[in-house]
Image (cartoon, rainbow, N blue to C red; front, top):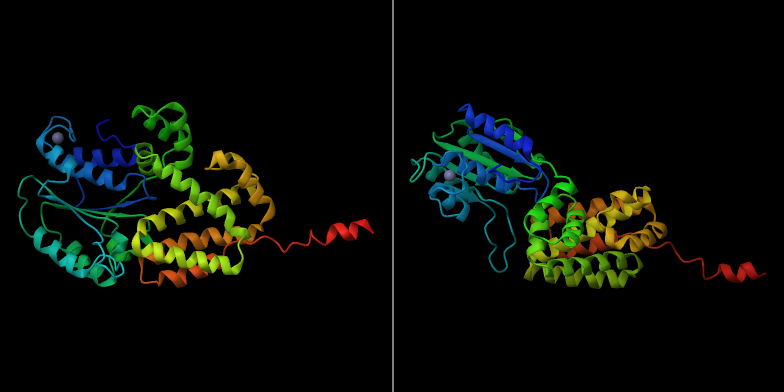
Length: 347
Ligand SMILES: [Zn+2]
């Protein structure tokens, strides 16, 4: 299969079927968890629409190669622009949508179809979404829009209803392992990464190419486990350090929050008696320790808080306040009565 996406046979079949019948939609909504290949699928669709080979997307013709290299004049991605020094990320602006409207009113330069990928589409603020809605109401000819999102609830229902929705799912761990093996990752590493990835193929490929990412993740996991025994003062101090880190390297903190979330979700899985479902298979003894010593409702609450923190950081929240609140919500060990008990027992 030239589309080459791991575990997305259904979405690919829906697209190839529509293309073969000459019924491509003018706007698509690709929905699915982070790192499963939504953006890759959007690029493949752009290739299929502009390919000059026998079996589109052929990957070998000039348009296919230009699109893969990100230098095709008719294929563009609209995303969150890099923040200025002190400015916070503020999502995709209405000015970016206006520019997009200007460009899409022109005929394609090189190919048959202009393809505009908006990724992540849910980062469009309200005025950007309203402006974009006007485009969807009167779509320009020879343009296909692909909206990519992990959270469609943040898009206006009027936008969603005008797009053809395709859902991408997490591929199975076995699918990821096979894909890694096919890319010459050695057997043991492939098994571990597939398991840790929990289906996020993009993450698995990135870590296979750069093992230092795995080391950093292991550090984050150790810290996740240590949170529960930190005092309030230690938590506040850590919150301040993380908020500073976020100003310098936002993506590092987001990766850390993701690792923490995966850790605490694993603790929850162990508490539910489903150890087979644990992602961090290499850390099972530590997970069991946390599962045994921490209240389940606090763990569940913290997993949700971590998920939300990732999103709030992308909005206008103040990082320090957000991290303080988050860390104070981390599960804590039950007050130690054990120190008193031995004496009582001796009586
Ligand atoms: Zn081609």
